[in-house]
Length: 218
Image (cartoon, rainbow, N blue to C red; front, side, top):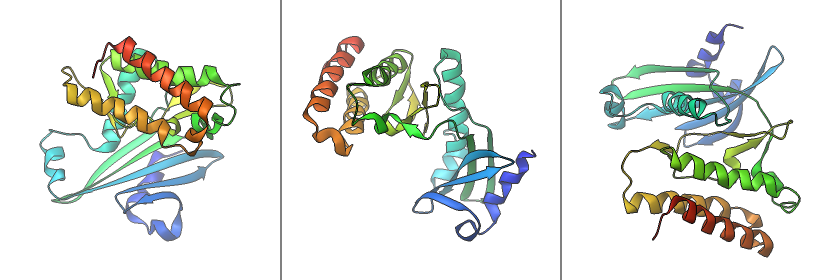
C-alpha cells in the first residue's frame, strides 16, 4: 500500500468522504478507515495562529511528530504501545500547519471497559498503575493519564495510546508533579463507574502506592 493514500485527509471534504469518530472543534479530528483489509485510525491536527511560530522555530513539535517522539522513547524502554504507522505535516499558510498521524487498529477495548468486572481483571488495572509509575521514574509524564488511554488487545496485552498529553522533563517542580497526579486522579474519577465503592477504594489504595513509589509528597 502506498502511504500517500492518507494525504487525501488534508484536502478532501472529510465530513462527506470519511468516517469521523470524533471532531474536537475542527482542531483535532479522528477518522477510522479500512484499506486493503486493514483498519486504521487517522488523527488530523490543525494548528493555527501564534502557536504555529513555536513549531516553525523548533520550540515545540507538532502533535503528530510528538507522537513519534514519545513512541521512540517508549520503544527504548520496551513499553508496549501503538506505534505510528505514518505521519505527515504540511504548511498550508504562514500561520496554519496541519498534520496527520496514522495508527493501525491494535484493539477495540480499553482498560475502561473492564471496570464493571475489575475484581476479575485486577491484573489489568495493576499494569495500568505500574506503567504510570515506570514512566514517571524514566522521565516521561502524562498530564491526562486515563483508563481509555490504554488498549487491551486480543492477546490481553496492554498498549498505551494517545500521547497528546505526554511530556519529557528533567526538572520537576512541585506544581508540575501535582498536575501529573491530578491528571491521574481525574483519569479514573472521570469514569461513570467510579461510583462503585469497591473500585473507588481500589483506586485510592493504588494512588497511595503510586505516591510512595515516586516519593512525591504534597
